[in-house]
Amino acid sequence: MELVNQIQSLTPLLRAQATVSEASDKLSKDLLELVYDHKWFKLFVPKIYGGLALSLLDGLLVEEALSRVNGSLGWTVTLCSGANLFVGFLDQTLAAWLFHDKTVCLSGSGKASGIAEITSNGYLVSGAWSYATGAPYATAFTANCQLMKTGTRLVGEHGEPLIRSFLFLPDEVRLIADWHTIGLEATASYSFQIENLLVSEDRCFEISPAGAIRKEPIYAFPFQQLAETTLAANTLGMGQHFLSCCEAIFNTRYPHGNEHMNGTNPHSILNTVWKQLKQRRETFYLLVTAAWEQMETNDRIEDRILKELTKHSLDLVRFVRQRVALLYPYCGMKAADPKSEINRVWRDIFTASQHSLLV
Image (cartoon, rainbow, N blue to C red; front, side, top):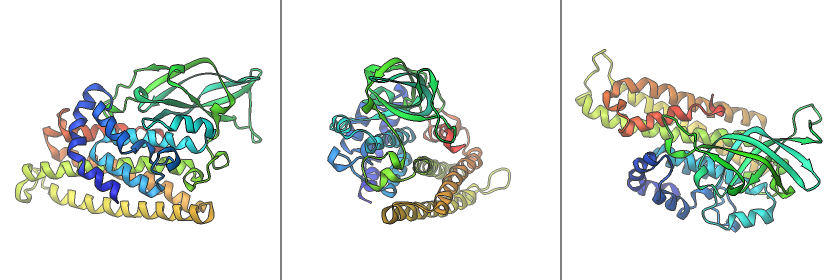
């Protein structure tokens, strides 16, 4: 894939910016310019709005490739391109105004920790949300709120809370720079707050196939599986990066296939992990392809395929996490040095593993 080849050619430049970005706790200016120039935040945005309009499969391959280069870069692109996908659910006049900008970056939270009171002029919104990836350079924020009317929480036909998504502009939110983690440091995943903000009706949208305004298949794809696959692709890329770092260390630490002091052969273990990861990667992308083809052909995906996609996405993440933990002790003190590349990858993987969808 041409986009993946481009990323591979940019690897030295992108990795050189990883240390700069981590030191400032956000993507560097030079790194952001590359993101904008290559439209990585617009993976799933229609071409009419300056996007790449990729299929899910191609988008995942790009996210995997970026995460293989740098975890914070891959994670930020994945989360922000995922939020930019909401272009298909927004009022299209509002969408055209937002997405004409090449730097457009939606940031936000899926947690329904806000309240939206229905008024005659729109919605009165208050709430606080955590983990808004890319917050410092966001051109808009999205957040989920529970609907209320005259002080009463509204519910659906089965008694479930009525939840809707809302869009806010940067000057309407208060950012809280509270992202202090061991890994993914440059994702700048801040919290934000809103208090008694009146927004118009066109700022409210529903993230569901029924709520899609645009009719491209990507906007009808079930959002749960879309989110799970993008995060799995992220972990897959970071896992491959970790294994490559292990190879470099093992070639020096265990020359000529020497055994570890406990009698095991780290090279043999690493080779087995590479083969197992390759097999799981192939299965994962075969399922993604099957689901996408059904969506394009039938406008729906069989429940069986969706369940398998969820299962293999989570299994892939679990496998990477477990095998990284298996290999880490063979890497020596270099792996414990916070300034080393392998330590950064290790920290990124285990920080990413705390995402609620991956537990």
